[in-house]
Image 1: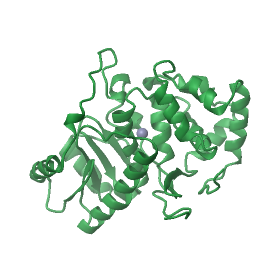
Image 2: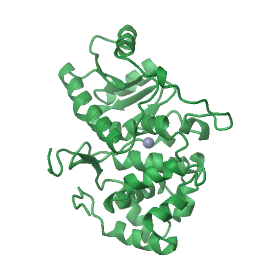
Image 3: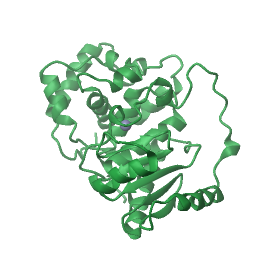
Length: 314
Ligand SMILES: [Zn+2]
């Protein structure tokens, strides 16, 4: 992997949008916390062991809807799917482990506290049938979604691995940065729904969210970064203009291309009490005093992007 550019690209297709999932995420749920209640300290003694995972698998086996399903422990997840067993193993290794290792390397110190299942349904038919049968869900996204209620990432894996990587980001944000606002949670999730590896690090590439954002920039309908970063979860997900995901994604992409994304994440995390939206930290990390001028430059940057795989490392 030394020094090679793109090794593989995890997806060609769009990822989830929680707003359309069966579990629209209100403020408290999105962060995994009851915001008004005092937060107990995280007890590290609850760290999951291999036997916890094996016990989970033993119970999961009893819940499987048919013999077609196979199960792979890929900590901190349990992966279960109805493709050929060898394929389920490959996805556990090549997508889940790949993404988890690289996300942890750059962003996340803590694993999710509870065992989460990743259900990989082999096609549309299986996805629609089993979301109903197992979870009593009627998904409104054809790709997949994260259900905190069921402690599961639920995927139609025939649509590609990109949604899976997107959704993997969310439980890690919950575990590591519970007060993270939706714009950054979804900005990072959607950045990595189209990603590959460069110099051993995960890297997001331009994707299908670009053309719509470019149209919105031309129509001058993209809100200020102060407005974007200040959106409540409800306002973020109930986005009448439809630009929030793309604006957040391409802000993260811009930071990545300038070598500032990991720095921004860490500084924002450290300063979350005094800067809960991240806006002040954003200005500081960018070195910008005039955010209207910055937005103009960012818009030009976005308009110059092409859909495809950006490999230039600045
Ligand atoms: Zn998401």
